[in-house]
Length: 156
Image (cartoon, rainbow, N blue to C red; front, top):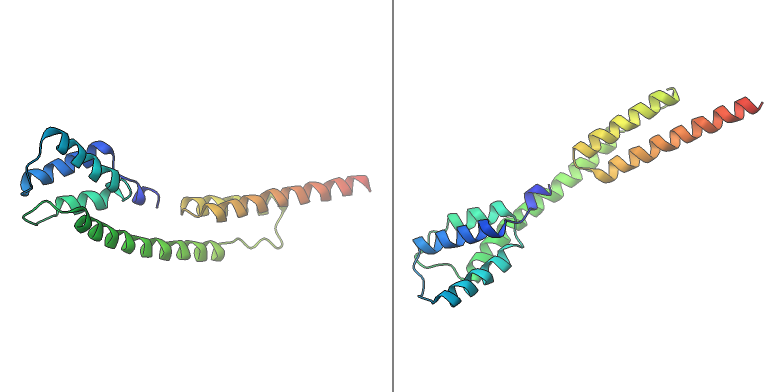
């Protein structure tokens, strides 16, 4: 999910802005103004995911170069859609992790530990790092309990 929110590089933003400037009409400006113009846009575009910025700039079909307000409106709408999808994915991942919690009753300590670590692996792979940590913590607790039980048996 983090990759879906990664910002564009400065080079990419500048290339896309310049390309858009070449195919749209805009007011004329000197070199210093052009540099400020580029800086003003890149400073704001860095707050958005790279693919959304690229798509928005490359699909602009207006006659004039877009104002920041026009771009912001389009970018915000697309980011909002992605946020809804991200929230739904997070809920799904959490529900899946709960369902995939292993049944540990009647298993040996080694089996419980292995199943918890496997659940941690799959939770982490699906992006549920908190769930993975919970499974890892339970695996450590299982080992500690088993060691304590073994120690107590040896004392008696």
